[in-house]
Image 1 (tube, rainbow, N blue to C red):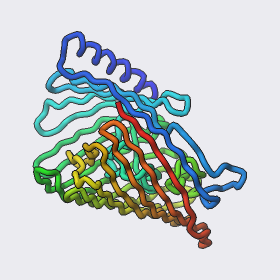
Image 2: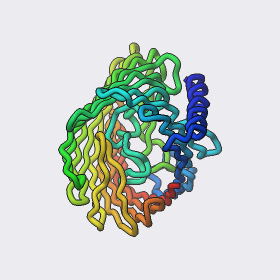
Image 3: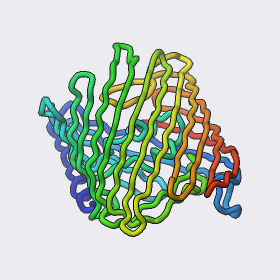
Image 4: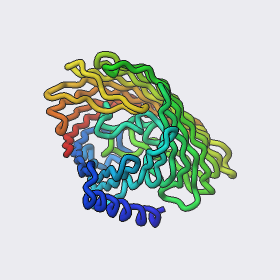
Length: 358
């Protein structure tokens, strides 16, 4: 897979350069950086020797986008956080058919409303536990997508980023009723059938605090097959957004049997300006405002059925939008972790973020 990306990435840069030479009308460069700080209690740690706080450059991304003609587009994005360069997006897209767009390269798989929302636009600093643990992210593949009327659909074939053997078919269907002011009701569902060919699979997830330890640890599985299903609901009216999602998966290990994982979240947000977030093609965008405050909260849970482990979190937050480029976020997280029927009780964490886009 890395070999494929190595060929695609230079091709995208050549296409972008040609676009400039031939004076195509749209060529843009941009990026964003996120600086986070977490402070948390001992319940978020496996070992009391570890620190109860952490400061990280969470993301530092650079991207190049090109419109090469009326029908062809491309995107190339890298992340340079943690001292490493990681290719995120590297794809070309053809939009010349009336019935579908075709996207080829490394891209997000069409699964999960929260996963498909850009990290710049999420309500809370971290996505929910179940989204991070189960929803597939970026992989190499080919995707068909369309938006007939009030519906959107996506269907793609993808190869796992860290494996030459694993592959899957992922699809998503949404329906929404939208007015001219971006008030809407959204209903969506996604499915993914994956062949893992004996690759190791293991849940290893934090309690929605990035710098803390991964407490939700599952069994190490030599997985053959994986079936994912998710359902999405969202409603927006005069700035208020209400959003919920539930995801389940069954993973087959020939030696251990079938393992079942499930979880979901419900979250809301409200900007004091009352402005709506932008919504298009089944995806939620940002608020375009200056000196605006957004209030947020979320409840989420994630259950590892065979391991008899479960976690629940409740979080409240406030986001301050200085302008379209600069934002500050603050979250208070209260989490409960249960292992083999024993509950450690609720405890607290605080997370802060400064993010700048350019």
